[in-house]
Length: 208
Image (cartoon, rainbow, N blue to C red; front, side):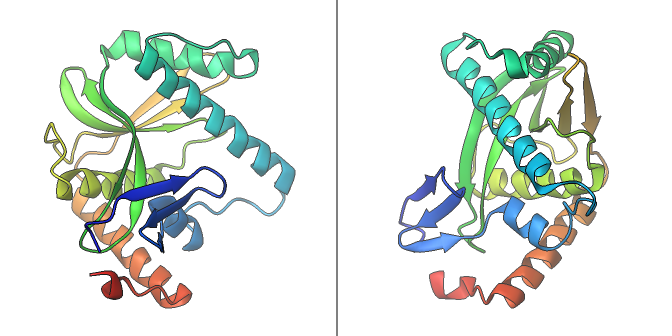
């Protein structure tokens, strides 16, 4: 099955390998409660935040592809924050919106960015939420590092060099490094993945 090419459908954020739909890292984390939100937050606000996040990611990806920024006044503060991050850290992007799947366990994900932060090759996950969910992002970046490694992507990246970049609408940012927790974070993801497979009836072994 791994000989098939991974495809991605923007609507619904669906990953496919051949005819099979693969669960994503984000889907697994959301389904197992890592990204639970308080019930008092209206659904329309969560949906709006998701759309805004997609626009921020698309704008940053466009910049890395073309070297230019597309004007978007509604997210300009977040993009200012990204530019400050880039200037402060000397960030050099190696890969942007890199979609990968695990050829052993058949889950997929999109790595926001891999690049050099303070001259150290790193995995970077972008967030534009109100708050940064540190635990969930730690687990998410561990799963992304696993995908990067099992696919032999270049350059090799130290698992301690995992970061969450929290972009804020006022042009400020927070850069959080997740060092010293990789084994714990990866184990947490695999436990959640097993729980997800049991609940959803997803049998990754039939794809092997």
